[in-house]
Length: 496
Figure 1 (cartoon, rainbow, N blue to C red):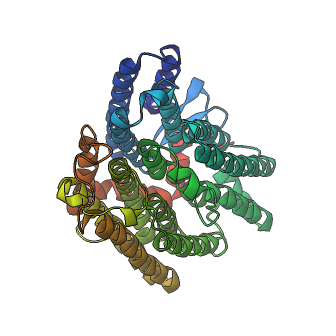
Figure 2 (figure 1 turned 180 degrees about the horizontal axis):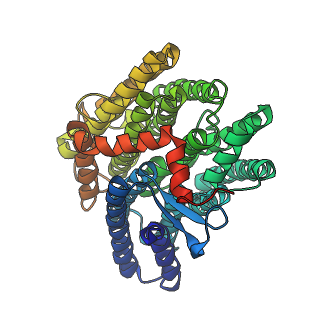
Figure 3 (figure 1 turned 90 degrees about the horizontal axis):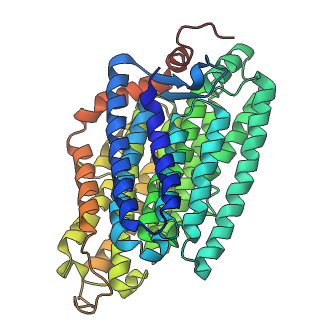
């Protein structure tokens, strides 16, 4: 029993609720939000150390024995994501102080921000399928308001699309939960895994597995990503960066967790389907990325490519594939937040999203240009930056598992990422300087610190992977062997 596991969930929740009572005390909300995210990051580091020394940490609320109570489970995979999401959220929060505007701040921005973090961390830590649905809904409700906050016509249009698609996927999620409960009589993930292993994954259970793949695939931006490009480009940069870094990653986490712990018995069906969807997602995302001249659209389609590439490692379902998936997932959360924040600054300076209408920004903002260049190279997978290691492992795993087609598509879409991001870099930062400093619509004052922090992390993950490699290996070992997770949840007690 580890009571620390509840704190990454309840700290942002309690703070968000308190902020509702202090709507006009913006400075107080900023300070407390900052303290909460620093504390959550610190607690996550402590729990990761405990997992490395003592194994998976669990907490059964109310003292109920699993599977009867509400359980939280912190394995290395989930805690790496909690830590990464906390650091990214901290940087987005710092960025928002100067950019989000008092109008949004007074309309409960910080409460909604922390509620979203509550849903994200709860999704990573829950050991119960129904509570996974609950935490999904918490983060989605917060995101609905954050997308629409500001009330612009385009925002409201994209919000309607975003809400309708996610409400439908949530309805299918509930249907899937009902089927699982009727088949296994439990909603505890470890217990479901035991029951399905005992009964065997027959055709009907495999069909239910594909239903969950549809649900989580929609939330992860996998193939059926119609809702994603518009809804990610309309909010302010701090919100878009948070969405790009975290929201699709929760769906990806759910797919990885479910298809390594519960539905892993028929990989020739389920994981092959994941591979096909991942390949289609990368191809369509790549076409979108190279086809637009809108900086927000280009980066949003790069989010879609990333989702497909991460899940390609799961489709391979080997140690190398999952090593690449975990590495690339952590990298992608950091790099996507960085490049979306930089894009927000670019739009703020120039007053346009069309990269054809920008030029020569590197003359007045060299640090901004070179940080964008570093983030772009990291996403492409150029050594020695953070994306390189994940891409190498996933590509090697695909070729060793004879998934040549999937590895080839991953490499081809890397070239599409290269073209799309270099198109931004060459048009925005090189060439004749169109705007003088006096003509710029804003300034970089107060927003450079979070960009520097994320850039430093991107470089550190690339040039010093040995300091994280042992943790990633522990995470992958747990994903490849579901018995480790199950034994930690039941803690030596009889499994009913």
